Length: 341
Ligand code: TXA
Ligand code: MG
Image (tube, rainbow, N blue to C red):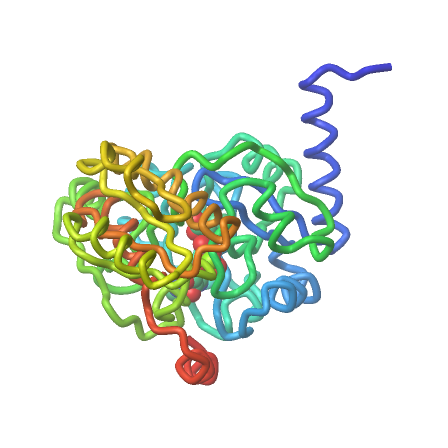
C-alpha cells in the first residue's frame, strides 16, 4: 500500500525519534542550518557527535528543545530576561546561554557550568523533538571548520555514512546559525545570527553588547570557521570585478560574489563561477552557505567578495564572510585547536 504524505512524514519522525532514543545520530533540518543530533543525556552518543564532527570535546553543544516550557528542566536560576526573550523569539533562530541544570551532562557543555538552549522553528525539528521528548544536543551537521549545511544534500556530502539517519526538510529558511545570547550576566551577544541585535534590544528595552572575544569557547571565534575550500578575498564592492579579472589573468580558478549593484556586469566577467548576491539581506543569508558550497563544487581556488552593511542579519553575513576570509594556515589551526577555541 502506498502511504500518503502525512503518514510518510510521521514514519520519518518516529524513525528519527527511535534512532535518538537508541543512542544514534540524526541529522535534522532547522530554520538556520541542519543539526547533527544526539540524545543530550546519553554521554556515549554525545561523544560520537564530537568524533564525527572532528570537533574538540571542549567546544560546547547547543541543546535543542521542543518548547519553551522545558526551559526550567534544562537550566537553573533562569532570569526573567530569559523568559521574555524565549516568549518573543522561540521557536526561532536564537540560543540562550544559561546556568546548567543538573540533568545536562558536562560532555555536552565542554565542562562549563552553563548550557546553550534553543527551540528551533522548523516543523520537522519540532515534531522530532516532541516525539523524542528529551533534549537533543546538536552542532551544525558539518565537519569542524567547514561550511555549515543548509540542505540534506550538503549533510550527506559532508558526513556520508557517519550519520545514522538524515531527515530531509528542504532548504533552511534563515540560512545562517542562531544568534547566541549569554544571559548569565549582563546580556551579551556571543555570535550574531538569525535574530538581530536591534530586535533583541527592542524586546529587552536596553542596549545589548556584542562580545568580540568570549571567555567561553565559541568556535565562531576560530578565525577560519565557516570556510569553504577556496580562499575568500574581501575587497570594496566596486573593486570586486577588477580583482576577479586580475586573478583570472594570473591563471587562478576564480569565484565571484557580485554585490547586487553590479549584477548587470555578471555576464561580462570571465571568472569560473559568478554569483550575483540577492538584493535582500534575508535572501542573501538564506543562500550564503549554498553559494559557498557551490564555489567548492566548481573547484574555485579563490572567491572575491565584499561585505554587506552590518545591520540586521547583514551582521551575521559579514561575520561569516569575515571568518571564511580568516587565516587558516596549519600553524594557526593547530594553535586554535590546542587552545580549545
Ligand atoms: O543555528 C544554530 O545554532 C545551529 C542549529 C543546528 O541549531 N547550531 C549550531 O551549532 O550552530 P554549533 O555547534 O555549530 O555552534 C554552537 C555554538 C558554538 O559556537 C558553541 O561554542 C556555542 O554555541 N555554545 C554552546 N554552548 C555554549 C555555552 N555554554 N556557552 C557559550 N557558548 C556556547
Ligand atoms: Mg557550526
